[in-house]
View 1: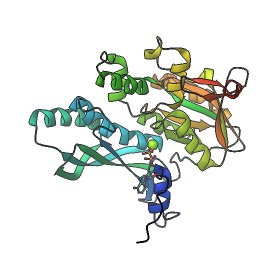
View 2: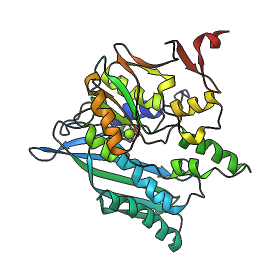
View 3: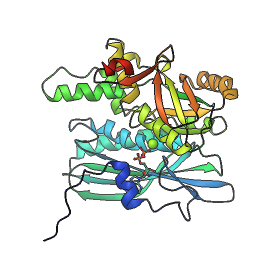
Length: 330
Ligand code: ADP
Ligand code: MG
């Protein structure tokens, strides 16, 4: 029998590229590869469609409060709409449940609909089945034609910005693992950032005319900016000292807090690029929305995302934080 030799497991993006991405979209205005797809809807609007799935044990701890889970399942989808500059309209909900626990379901629905109602987003269908706990939502929104914030629009010389503060959700994941092995409970402020992310929809809509590209921070700031850099065929330089670190990490060692802010996921803030001439307007927008907007770097010719210290010297990740490349070599 002829068996193919074992190969290295494919990464998520390699896998999508090899089996599911069939090249440029034919009917859609934008297909696979951005935070959401764009479908022509009317003469002046595009429909925006995105799907995100949460799986027990992989995306949340088994003991997560059901109301928080309901919130988060929708929030991560609305965050992708926000990253496109879209306004939400409707969503569908597919759930696999290990059993029927009415108290659990009531709390889940409460968390889900509180967020849906806050953003005028209506549940219009779905699917329900028995199975290991898994929640998949498809969110649908709209954006004026040509105004969506795509990942491929960054220009050399643009500023790089990020909303809010980073690192707390990843810290909560770290501590959650420790709780699972008998450690102290995760502090409320950290757990809140992991369990109840706030999709930055108002920001996304306001950025339609100010930003050149955007993405939501789901996998970690550097990884997600890497997607923008790759799609825009450009490089970015990020200043470590300008990256906003969540106040809930004030007691953590600086290098560890910086590492979490740069590489931890689950923050669901927006990272975006914008022309230098929009600095003032973006600053004013942050004040209007009561949401800190930090200018953290610059778009450059080339490829890749680099991190530099206050002297412009390159930093590289290590196990405990971000260190100078030189320190790595010795
Ligand atoms: P995000 O974090 O913004 O939700 P992902 O990193 O999950 O985006 O996915 C990257 C891109 O690949 C997105 O455009 C997404 O729609 C697409 N994608 C992911 N899985 C599949 C799949 N199984 N089939 C087709 N497209 C996919
Ligand atoms: Mg996204």
